[in-house]
Every structure is written in structure tokens, then in C-alpha cells.
Image (tube, rainbow, N blue to C red; front, side, top):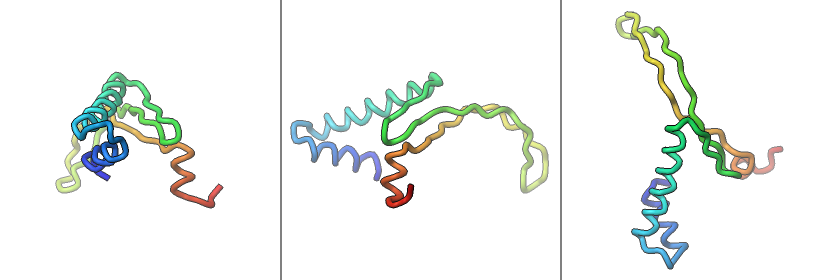
Length: 95
């Protein structure tokens, strides 16, 4: 599912919302989540999962083509961990 399909489904399931309103809702939710993660906070959606950030230290890597050493700067990467309900719905019958 892509963002436009999510917006369309929200608009279809909520006739009181126009497509523009549904787009604003989705954008607000995503932007709020992104802002929290930029601040280093964890975003947890019960039953779905948790988004967090993981800091990666600077390291020395190798260019596979030339074999030359390359410095990789430190960075922050997003991380997602699926919630229990999501895992159970994706794998029915497993316990």
C-alpha cells in the first residue's frame, strides 16, 4: 500500500472527510511521528509496532571496487519493531 492508497481508503471509510481532509490527517500523523523521531523519541503504536532511532558509530569501511579504506561518518537510522498483534495476524496459528 502506498500513501495515496491509504488516503483514499481513509476517505472512503469516513464519508464525512473529503479527500483533502484525509490527506491532511495522514500528513499530520506522519509528520508528528517524524518530528518525534528526529528528537530521538520512540513512537509506539500499540498492536502495530514501535519506531525508534538507532545511532551508528563512525567506522572504517572498504570500497569493494578498489579496496581503498573509506571513512563512514556516524549517523542515525530509523528502526521498526513489529508489535505482538501484527506478528500474530501475519503468522496465524503460530504461538
